[in-house]
Length: 246
Image 1 (cartoon, rainbow, N blue to C red):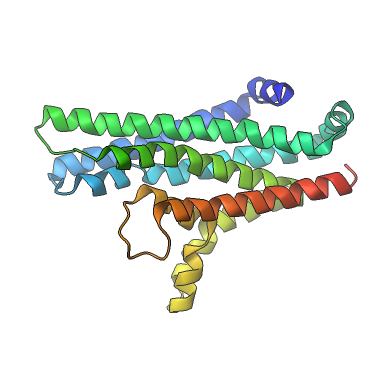
Image 2 (cartoon, helix red, strand yellow; image 1 turned 120 degrees about the horizontal axis):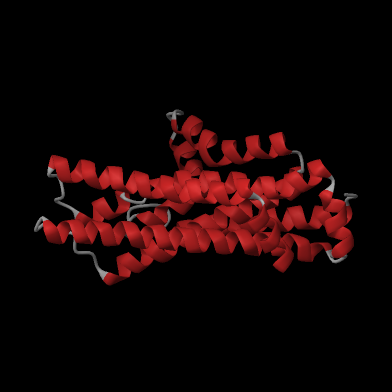
């Protein structure tokens, strides 16, 4: 795992992309908060808190890209052979990759969520606006944001080990996380809408909404669906890594 941290730290493109994801998440939150304050539309602080996390989804796309490229880049350069010689147990390579980027996603998501919520509270105090949230919902947003990004990273790494080709991997990641939900949402069939609910990004986003009891999945249930996707793809990718030649 230490070697994976070294790879991440010594490749500017990777940590710069992570930095870009952080800035994107905070920028979207700041824009949403500013727009809401200017319009004076803060009747529901719970809704505002959910909207502040819209950027987490797009930040997740950037993290998924950098996670996938951390794997496919080694196949493209041939460095994967050196990695597998240094670490003969191939499952350990896939595990280390997943742990490093899952930890990055967890820390980034929780930190940006905490900053966004604190900024919202601070602005509310200065403008005598009600931004009070239940402690349980705050914990759901902060922890859930980190787990959402961690799950997306593991999912992308699994796809990368599965496909290995950088273009094919990136296309698949982007289609699964963004394009497929948009295209399927345009189909006016109830069964298609139910299917969309179980796509990884859509299911995972439910963690940013309060429990209503009307949705097919609860917030934590949606995050669980994302975890199943991530575990299944990572497990498949790891199994193929063990069987195929580098």
